[in-house]
Image 1 (tube, one colour):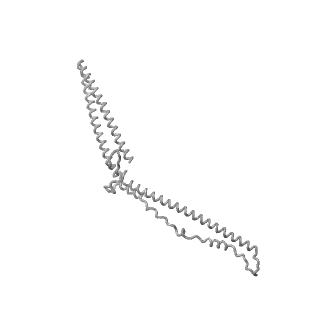
Image 2 (tube, one colour):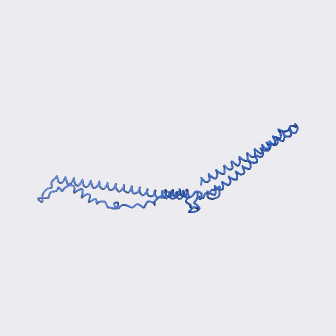
Image 3 (cartoon, one colour):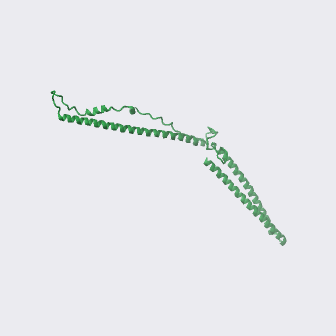
Length: 249
């Protein structure tokens, strides 16, 4: 089906159909598309400096180095070991922190990508829903349809033409039925005359005439039945053709 003829259908009286369309419009009306995503302030806040992490972890261990009492004083071996352990702990913690921050950044980027993709898909879906809403809320009778088999016009016009053809076919069938009834009545009269005839020769002539009339009536009956069949087939074909064309478009 192509675009409607008008932007606004004629006859805007408050009918039941219009009320139904209005309620449908209210149910289908949706909000504007989602606004573009904005990164939160926290996403731009810098992560703590790696040196700060190292210092914080290193500060967990108290200073074990004792002040030298003499210039040639040798440091305690235990203090040296503790300093090594503290340094190893701080460096390992720093590496763990770096790895965790890297993983969090990757996860954050992946989630942001999914959110953006969902936003794009939602916007596309809302656009399709808006187009569909505009199509189904417009009166069907005012919708224009066209095909290679019939001229372009509104559905209401096509249905009116089809109704006219059906009316014409029904009128012709009624005329043929009247002719059939007249033939049957004439045959009945001839049969009555034949039964009342007492003379052998006139009866024979009447019988021959009756047979001739019967043959004529039989032929006419066959013709009428054939015409009736053709009209029925034509009527059915035209109806199916119009319905299929409207459904296809």
